[in-house]
Image (tube, rainbow, N blue to C red; front, side):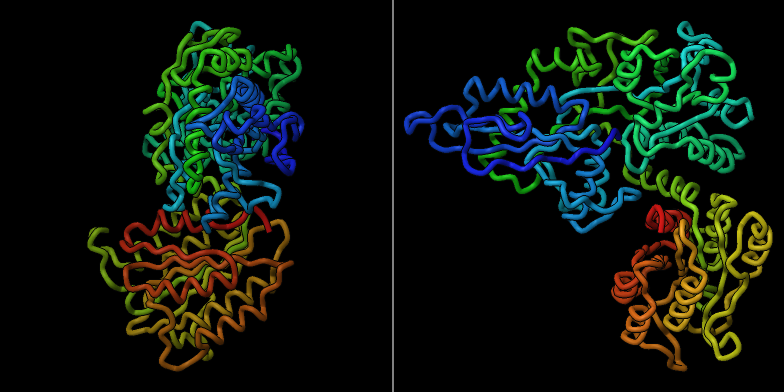
Length: 574
C-alpha cells in the first residue's frame, strides 16, 4: 500500500458537461432528446498506480460518445487505497478482515472497484458470503518479486543466476546480515503474497515451525506500513557499511521495482522472479453487488475499453503488464526478467490463494508480531476428559494443551501471558484458580509450559463460566498496559454457564461487563468453543459487549487453527 488518499472527491451536483473532482469526472456527451434515452453516471475506484490510465481511457471513451443500449454514460474515476475500500466493504457486510481495521468515513463504495489484487476479493468473499461482485477479470498484471539491491544480488550470481527463497531464508536466519523487510501483509497484497511464499518455503524439515516463527520475526523487524516507507530503507550507497545497514531483501511488485529504479537511485534494485511464483498483482475489475442493470451494462462497456491496445500501451509506460503477462510499448523489462510472465489463473478469477491458507498465515503473523498482554483461561470441567476420535483418542484437555503449547511457541518474548483454570468450586468459594500470574514470556515461558502440562480436568466438575469471565476481565483491566493488546482468552467445551451453585446469570454478567468496560482501556474477549454443543448465541452476546469474537472448533482436533485464528481477531494495538 502506498500513501493514503481519499477514495473520492465530492461529486458535483446536477448533470454537468464540465470536468469536476480535479479532472476525475467525465460528463455525458452533449445530449438532445433524439440522442439518448437516458443517462447514467458510473463511479470507478482504482489504486494509485493505475488510476491515471483508467481515467485517461474513460475520458476518451466518453468523448467518443459512451453509451449502452441508448443510455449515455458519464464516468467518475477516483483513487482509492485497496485496504481502505476493503475495510469499507467489510463494514458494509458486517465482517472484519484480519489486520485491516475499521473503515474510514471518507471512503465511498463505487460501482466498479479495480483493486490491485484478487486476494482482496477472495478475502472478502470468504468472510462475507453476501459479497458477490461480478466480472472480476484482470485489467493489468504485475508479478510479485524479491527486490534486492543489485550489489547484494550479484553475490548470488545475478543476473545469470537467481537466488532461491530457501537460500535467502537461510541467510536471513543465520546472522549473515541480510536484513529482510515487508509491507504489512494484513494490509498489502504484495506483502501478503511474499509472506505466503516465505511461509511455504519454511514448512519443510523437522524444525519447520521454529524456522517459520524465526522467519516471521525477522520480517516483522523490518516491516513498514506502506511501500514507500519500505523502499526508503534500501541502501543509498554501495559501500559495504551502507549495504550491511540497509534493507537487503523485500517482496514488492515488479512495478514497484521499475518505479524505484526509474528515479535513478544510487543503488538500483534487482527483481528476482521466484519459481514457484508468488500470487501476482492482477488488478481485477469487479462490479459491486447491487449495481443496477444500466450501470452494470455501462461497466461492461468500459471494461471492453480497458482491453484495447491503447490502454495496454499506457500500462507499459507505467511498468505494468497486460493481463496475459505480455508487455505494451514503453515497458522496460528489468534485468534478468522475462519478456512475458504467466498470468493469474482464469484471467484473474482463480489466481488468489486458498482463503484458509491466507487465514492460517495471517494468524501466525499476527501472533508473532502484535505484542500482547493476555490471560488464558482453560476449562477443566469433567467433559474435558472426553476423547477426540479424530485426534487418536486424545482427550479434549490434551488437544487443548497441545494447541496452547504450539501457540506459545509463536509468541515473542515481548508478550505477557498468564494462565487460569476454571470449573466449579476450585477453592476459596471460587470457580477459578490462578496457575500463573500474567508475566513477561522472556522470564516465564518455561514455567508456563510446565504448568500447562500439569493441567488436568476435574472429575464431575461443572462449568462456572460467567463468574470466571467477569473475574478474568477485571484482572486484566486492573493491570491494563498501553501499547499492548490486552485480552482474555477462554478455552471451553461447555454449552455456556453450568454452575449448580448459582453465581452470575447472563444478564448480570453483561451488566457487570458494561460497568467495567472503559473505552480508554479496551480489552478483547476471545472465546474458543470446542465441539458442537457450545451455545454460540450466549457467547456472542458477551463478545459483542466486550469486543473480540467467538470461534467454534466443532472438531476439537482443529483447536490449533482456531486458537491462532482467535489471536488474529485482536486489534493491532490498544
